[in-house]
Length: 528
Image 1 (cartoon, rainbow, N blue to C red):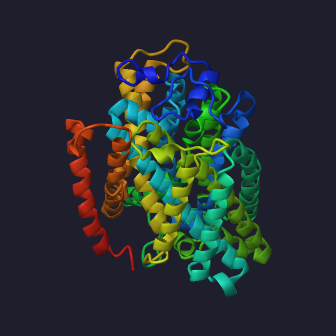
Image 2 (cartoon, one colour):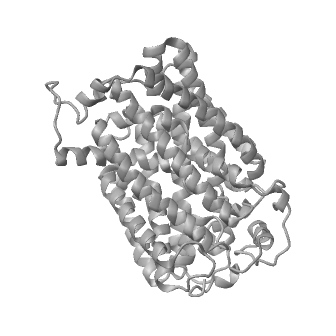
């Protein structure tokens, strides 16, 4: 990047092979594109193609959340409001997806997109916050997966696991967590092959559900409660204020469900070409948007939104059990387990990349840069697993529905990550030389960056104060990692010397919000 002092680290004209070598080099900083391959570096024969990348994107997004989607959406919105919510989400998330598509071609040398975009665009401390925030938010997402899979297992063994919230469920989720750690240590290529199969396995039960629900769908039921029902039971008519309130109530759910849209970019260092990254992102977005909207809306032609909102997790299984008996419920619950396990592996691979790259650039403790013989970031995976384990224990003490709480916290944590990427694209399109031969125009890049930023700000507004305060606290407690990383990288001087003037202001603001977040969280009733 011409305007960045770090531009020399990875030349935009580097060949795919040299970029792959740089991606796996064990240097302390971002490595030279001419470095020789490190042990475990991916060769061209081990690169991931568009099918594997699309499977990673779809598998990262379609996890356990889709199986509880009817209940999650119906708890906040009627059929009409859900349609509007999906339209807004589809519009906004397309520009987030397009942000990654454009940046993957405009800045092909910047691997592990989300972190490197933030660091190259806005400095070391912002890069740290994004790497750390993305890492933690996805660890929290895997806590949600642990809650969901044990609820599914509990449907087969209720005498042991109950509804998935007892001590036995905590132990079961913990065992799965450490098993996924062992599997993720085998590397990205192994995970890609597994997830092509896993993606098929999780989509089939969803398609069965869609076909089954279509057979009992009643248009009269769907239209009668189109805008919801009053407490008296009377059907409501359209009211803009009420509808937009319902739409806002679904935004954290839809954002959480689309988390992972950047999956192909995060592992782009292992992609055959950056064109494959762009294609895989588009395929994943379209497929998942269609699945999500159909799964959440169709059941409203059978039940009222209030009936669905009161169903047990996962609500898709509850619907199938009510209409098609034990066999229908079993199909869905097996799908939940396949979906969660395959998505869990994808996320383990993706989230561990952030501390790895941040450690190479000297803003995370240097041990996070370690890779094993398979090229996997073993130390980062270990600490990711520890964070997930701690989150599983914390979820056991959450008041109310642990799934909903964990989902909202995870969604809020990832919002700054997406917004920073949109801001980076805006900056590149506005200030830098636009490369030749790119299929996207500068005007397209600028419009995408601006709209993506505005949509991100809307999501922050829609998230509400409670989860913003929790997110602020989680961000604040990570700052010592930045200080330790700078010190281990050999940066001289006092702690304050690790920050620029603007970064000092940002750091103080994050710390102040973190203190406020602790006080607010303890008084909000989130934890029992």
